[in-house]
Length: 215
Image (cartoon, rainbow, N blue to C red; front, side, top):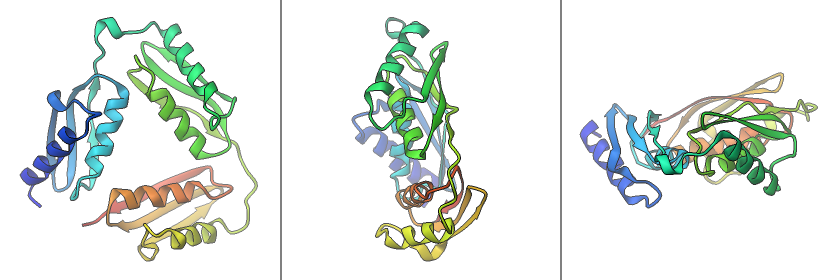
């Protein structure tokens, strides 16, 4: 696919997604590598833009350089923003009480500990939805867990069970709680399924993503 055609498809997808205002988003492409530049009105919108681009056939990677520009009347004091983030975290039953947040100039940093990656992901998602946040950074650490048998085999079995994955083209290595997943997949959806499966294994505290999308 030519770069111009890929840019056209990405622009169409951004326009199609009602959660995104693409009026100030500039798209460029180079051999499947898509770069987004410009401004959006919220951090949630910036995240949604990445997801939209990843849905487009032919996209191999996304470099999201969008800046969040919040209108003056919508800007929040750090204390008020932190209060809303903490309230939202507390109300979500998936997020452990050990997760905290701090805010500086509208930038939210999540701290504390969790047992599972999905809890970290949920905390980032919840914080990104709070109005007034420019960006969200996660410093949440995973609690060490006993190694539950052969993690590598458990992950490979999970790949085989997943109808959305072609497990034959993905390899897994493990070392002291760190899992490295590499190989080729045919879409970003398949990529995300593989990484989520790796994080779900007991004893995993870090996942190195070396998967590439191949069309």
